[in-house]
Image (cartoon, rainbow, N blue to C red; front, top):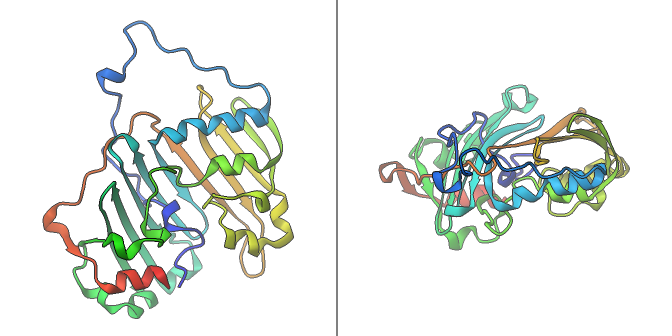
Length: 275
């Protein structure tokens, strides 16, 4: 069963994760009166986009992601090898009347947990998840989730949306305003991006070769928003998929769930994500 149009590993919470650091530690702060100069943003639009994703690879940021079906937010903190993502089905999703999903995933280098709240038809299919230990974090057995992408996080590839791959697939781009860009990309050439995963691209068929996109950069040339317009196909209406990045260098370590809120994951958890 596919609960979402793109991997949960790309998603985070419908509500923004609180408790982010307001500033860097003293060790990270520049000397008084010596603010670091912003790097020069390449004049060529394509080069500017390619350069804008480099900061993401450092793995210290917050993000939000949304499309017509799901929305979420989270953060990645590579210095502590921790990350978290929350995801919820959108209330304007027509399928929401049939089921809803609310999920919180927490990852460290050695452990991972998921808190899952299902309602409607999907909950009826997995009664053990519906009624057992509601509100608890399910501790995941790493040997059982190996190869299950939605329940893993790769700290060697920390971008939840794979925007570096998207920028490499840009076929036409222009600067449309102050630090804003627009153009088209060829999704058939995209590999390694969950924002436009393989199933989405296949469904778009020939339309996938020229998808409109917009992008925004901050004053230092770092990517803050990347949005792709998905055309209508079959019964699917036209919609937008979008990822936003913020708090570069200012994220904080993700805390493990309190021991009193943790139980071992039942077999239905693994079955749900493998189906």
